[in-house]
Image (tube, rainbow, N blue to C red; front, side, top):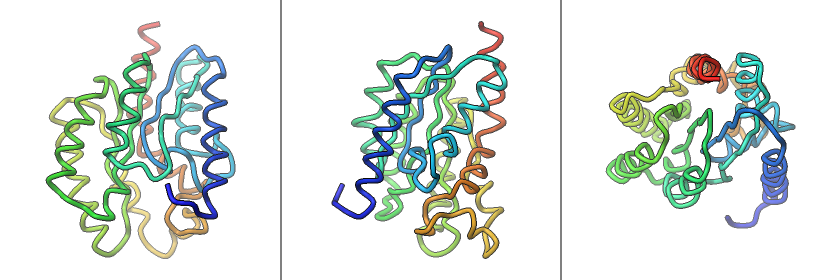
Length: 216
C-alpha cells in the first residue's frame, strides 16, 4: 500500500481487528474481504457490517462469537488468494462471509476476474456466504460491476453456496438520497451504509445460525 493520510487509520483498524481476534467466543466467524470488511468509514468495529453480522449470529444462536477478520485495506482477488485463503485454511469457522472484488474494477479484466474468483470459490468451505459487488451507481465501473456480479452469482450458485445479493440491495439505494450512507470519501460506507450491507447478508446468516444451532 502506498502512503496516504488514511494509512495510520487503516493500520490502527487492522490492529483493532487483530485484538478482537484474541477475544474468546463459542463460535468462530471469519471474514474475507477488503476495506469494507475492515469497516473503514465506521467509527468502531461493531458498526461495520462484519461487526453487525457477528451480533446477528450471537442473537440468533445465543452463543458468543469470536471474529477473525482476514480482510485487508485495498485487497483484490489476488490478495485474497495469496494471503487470506491460506489463513482461512488453518481455521475451522462456523461462519464465513466473503465480499471482495470491488478494487478489481479499477482495471477490470473479465477473463482474469472469472479465473481468480473460480479459484477463490474453490478454496472456501461449503457453508461460506459470498456477496457480489456493491453498486457503483454510475459510469464504466458500474457497468463492469454488473458483469462481475453476474459472474460471482453464477459461480456461487453452481457450487450450491449461499449468496448475498449486495449489488441488488445497494442498487436499490442509488440516487442522491443515498449520500448519508457513504463516508467523506463517497466510496466507503458510513455506519448507516454498513447497515445496508449487513441486510444483504442477513437472510443467509440467519439460515447459517439455525444450522449452527441445530448442530450444537
